[in-house]
Length: 68
Image (cartoon, rainbow, N blue to C red; front, side):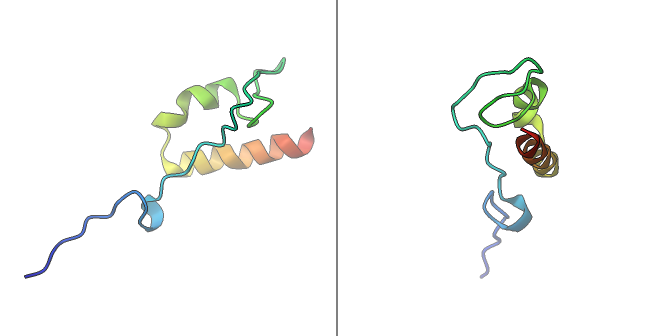
């Protein structure tokens, strides 16, 4: 008898993208966190984003960080 294994949150593409939050939360004049470089909207919507959307947010954060 075989056991069916359903993909879990740590399998391949299903791996959960972790939040970039470093608990240094403070918004600048443009509503961008000075700790993780997410916008206020990105922070509020993080939990409802799929992994691809989260990766796009992380790329935007890296761009903002380099611009600082």
